[in-house]
Length: 83
Image (cartoon, rainbow, N blue to C red; front, top):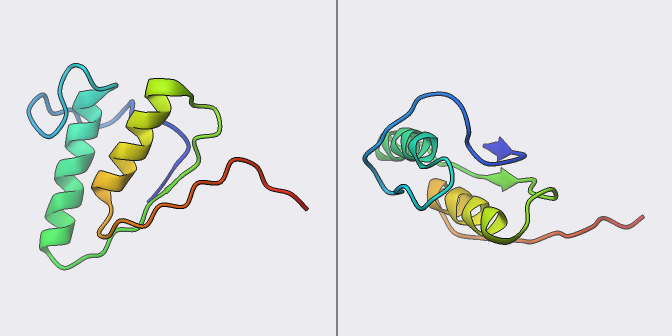
């Protein structure tokens, strides 16, 4: 799964892993629920977050969200690419 920002459209679930203090929590809950169902059915989920435009709490939530979705936790942070 690839993302360039926070979940802000699609299916919406009020109840779930995230709450009103998390950004776009209803969309994040729906995506998390879908990911959990896929993992329970034997699928592996790998995530890539391209969050170069996010900062502070938005960046922290985006990283936590993508980590929560994936099957295993391996995080590599890239800030800039050099030739």
